[in-house]
Image 1 (spheres, one colour):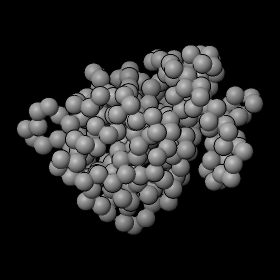
Image 2 (cartoon, rainbow, N blue to C red):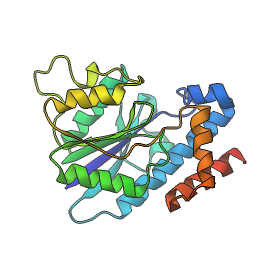
Image 3 (cartoon, rainbow, N blue to C red):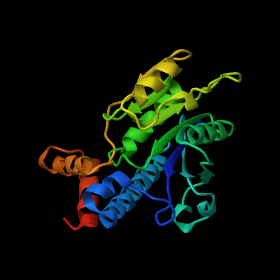
Length: 230
């Protein structure tokens, strides 16, 4: 079964990135964090795809925010899809429906969650391939870092669209989305993770160095500390 995994990204220098993080640590440092997050998710996707099985074949994609950058060198290692215009709900809907026409299942992720390891990505793709449920990975700020499924989210005559009837960037985004999805199909939750959106999120990530961490988490900490020269 062929599963597309699309990571939503913005192109540094073209679109603003990590605006809330920049308020806490400065624009230059926030840009460095974003570069590190993108590089880590690139590594995670590449490793996950290199370990494809006969049953589940994972194909990474970049979902790029700017139409002018879909051919940019920075995104040349994976196939690229354009997010399109309008708000996040419209863009998620467009990418999901586009890829659903070409693949057996689709996983959508962002570049804000560096703890999304190759094993976590593979496990999510496996669940999408084998489960009759939608799959969602919540973040502890009320959002979600991953959505996956091999079934339509919107029926042909849905009005309003499930994608468009969710309050994004809100404390109850994931719960509202799960509630709307569950009216038609059950939703299986993955473990709760956290995004790197604020200074406190970055400090929380760096505090993992004092704990017993996984090999991937160790790699994340090394990369982040090196980039920030800590």
